[in-house]
Image (cartoon, one colour):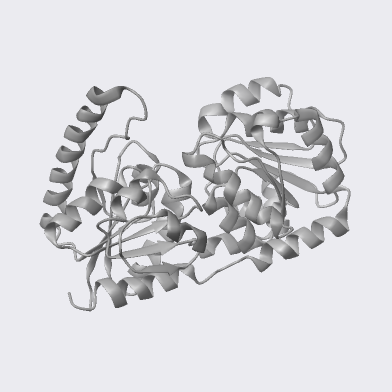
Length: 364
């Protein structure tokens, strides 16, 4: 029977794209899927473009500094956001809520709990974010990417380890077509440099160094919109064998064109790397809760699928040299690629849809 389900959360690609994958799996089963998030953040652009009715819920990030006054202001703002989310849930007769992480998730999941609407939350990383730590106390079901996360969340909701959803479209890239699109040669290997949907300054610094290096390999460089003009200026005139892109909404092409990926270590990115079987050089972001990206990356490195570079100890020239060595070691790249692909879990979105129907919607 058709039900109405609200996805809630976002902020970055690591939350938004898994949410879209889960939403599409639920929509394919005949359910109406809405998206609750912030208009000015990534979900406000991506969700409507994918055909999900979008509803704005104001939200404030928890202040890590500022003392009691800042926290009191946050509490008042959260209460107002919960009231707005309650109104939207009631107006659209939502039957269940699926929280996907990010601070904007919290008002909708808390509002659902206050209305008796069942909810599930999904945590993509080893170390849970603040919103999931809060919402785990009221959720009816907790969905995890990593089993080790279970001991780090409060509450008594049942836990299911499902992995991180990946959009099946990521598997549709064609190497020859992708190389032609980017103007790259099939005769030389390609390094993909990408800092996530928003870009990352440190990744871009490494990309610039790779582009300027003496090399016989090529570079596909996805800068992120906010950094693109600066990177383009730094590389003017553009060196040979470099394709410069500001934002890529067809990541299947970027992965298909690549032999090695230099990137951050968010769970969504790592899931995509496994799905397409790409080896990687991972530079975990230090600007995340409890340094969870390094925990993610170390797990991938332990499986032989990646090399980890810690930003605090970053040696730009040394990292470029390591990339160069990998791109000249085809047997090692092949071994890393196989190890990466062995980590893939391609049925996560369908598994989540099963659980939402079985655990949240059965009695609705």
